[in-house]
Length: 516
Image: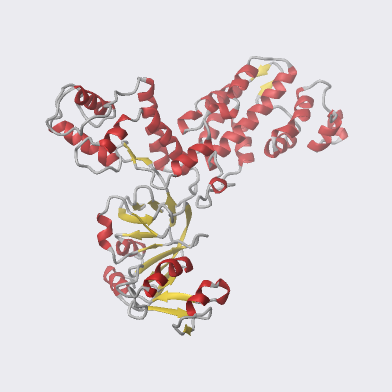
């Protein structure tokens, strides 16, 4: 077993500094325990010569009690207070012996650091769970936050400041409180299996339906035993909020969604709060935000103007990643550098079955220097060998899937935002159809907005460049942040929470990683 002297050496104390401490003092007890509390906490105490931060010789301080209370209510952010040792902290708060006070002081600092990290960056390290998920590790200076919490004696405020400042996070947090209040109130009735319910139907299941819709705020009046026009419209509203076909009929899919208890939806909200903690903390005043679960993209400008667009995202077997980066350039009439997997798995079979004429569709093969490569039977073998440098390109034109505009931001997945010639696909309710990139219905409008302060890029110039066949690259010196996220729950401007089906199955993976 290590001696106290060994612990002191590890903590960086000198013999002189040890000699200056009273035998049996709190400082001595803290110095002995500090190395077990993690690097941030150990360095914090060494920096202050192991003076207590949260307790005095007579017992715990008001700041200590305030921090425990803040940890007890961290479930408002979708986190579990038990993960931060709140039960043990409560027990230690009532003790006044030296060893318990030292243990309490260190436990409070460690709990603040752990809770602060989870609030700022997420409890789950996303990359460790799925290679398509990217987080923001090291997003905050936890040591500085701990020092500020102690010096100001306002640890609850210091902890709250570490949570995301996105308005969407705060709105969703309020939504979580609302659904947990429904849980506490006993939830709502289940409709149960049975025939599809429609306008004019009556009976016990309709009574339950009305009560269910009223509890969630979709229907103003719960009383009644008939599915009248107001009830039917409430069903449509519920379906729109949940990404279901808004036909006003309570069929199997809608009935299952209605019968989920409030606790089910509260868990989903908590998962999506976690995903906001992965997003960049400093996203700027007007980021472009893509929600792959909702098939939408949006940008709110500093003056309140907004751009919204339907989006097409990656297929379940080829999902759009969770990632962020600053927009660097707009490419007009872009050539499509066909990913090798797409070329070999999709384009080559079409060529071999004579359903695609490469030259007529604007495709060509080039080497690593961009020089043309003959289109012969051996070229596909060369393309399959990544060391050959052979690539398949498609020039701009009506068949190019990039649709005239590509918005480029650096990311390790090589995905981008772009237009598409297949505008009819935006009419579909479920739009998980691409190879991972994001197709925008209103790409021209976004490009116009991004170039609004450039005199040489009037709106009609943007439209002409997008329709051209000559590639032009326009660099953006201070482009907005692009955030590709996956939120199956969010709160709108009316504070109403919206949900979407988990098309990628990522809610289940995240729930398993979070535990409890």
